[in-house]
Amino acid sequence: MGLKALAFLAGAPEPIERFMAVSGADAGGLRERASEPAFLCAVLEFLLTDEGLLLTFCETESLKPELVHRASHALGG
Image (tube, rainbow, N blue to C red; front, side, top):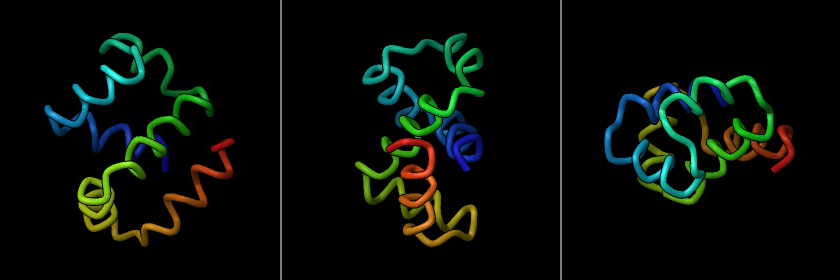
């Protein structure tokens, strides 16, 4: 789910810019760190801080928001 969330953010210019600003990652860093559980957890945590963005992601992926929370927790969040 973390990779899906990262792809979702990458398709949304303003949210991905906000994520890169708070995470300190640049575009190259996103690709390099995409396989790291802690980084994917940070992506999910970012979604969880913005209810509108979270709900849009969940609607796009046909997921319940609780599943994002559980996935974040499973990755260490």
